[in-house]
Image (cartoon, rainbow, N blue to C red; front, side, top):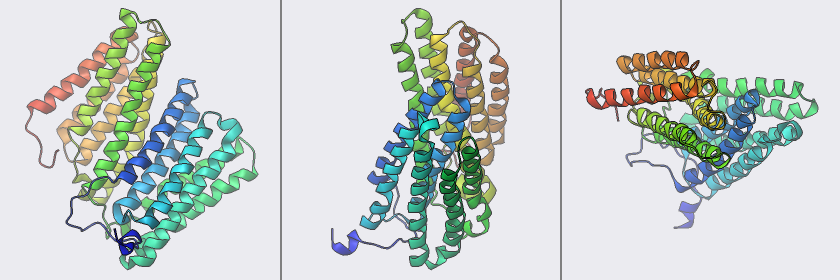
Length: 365
């Protein structure tokens, strides 16, 4: 590799003819989030639902922020790596803080702010070297900078006021791309790369379901009942996988601005639901005679989000079925675990069978 190829300015990747896949750097970046999601799952397993949700959102958004930058401007040269690799260290520090957030909230805030500052620097370079990207980059820099300042300002106050600072900063962070919609239309995401990256994060959170099942079985005697719960949990997770990846519509990110952004943001509740479902199975293994709220509610959320994503892809029939099954699953949550899990498995399997038997809509994977 020549020196000129090792050091390259950001360039617009949207209209290149070459077929794009995730780079080795992107896969390494994802690895840090495998650890972060595992730490957050442990928080949820401890019963801290609000803490889990509150920390999961900035962790997911840190991942998504890099994904969108890389989708448009990734050159995988030395300069890009020098901005991406320190973000991995920041994410690792966020993960190390999550388990004891009351004592390490300051470290979490600084780590997140560092990750955002590195992303801001990357967008500043993109705006400098890619003139057509400058209006979008300026707005991203402004919004992300305000949020980063609020994260750092939270160090000056104590909990719980600090967490209100975080909430305001997260709202600004999440709203920044929405407020820049007019400029995003001129720089649409690359449709083959973006769905793959979001699909990889879905794989990460599905892995947490398997990890939770293993943890549950390790901590308790393996009886026919607990083994049946574990196997049902993994089988339902496979159903989620099939329903998501059986309809990974690459065109949705370009169909309309609203549909594309709804599809993107819907991955946040989808990821929350999948991790919560795994922890629910772990809880069900420990308490097999209890009700199935901890399993049924997350499963209903997953089905509902999958339905919403189908609606974004203009597949109204499948979307309606997913939403109806979500309501049915939520009602099933009041049943004992031994009765609810087989029913949820049937709901998932029936949808998979329906998708296999029906004619595939145009644009489906």
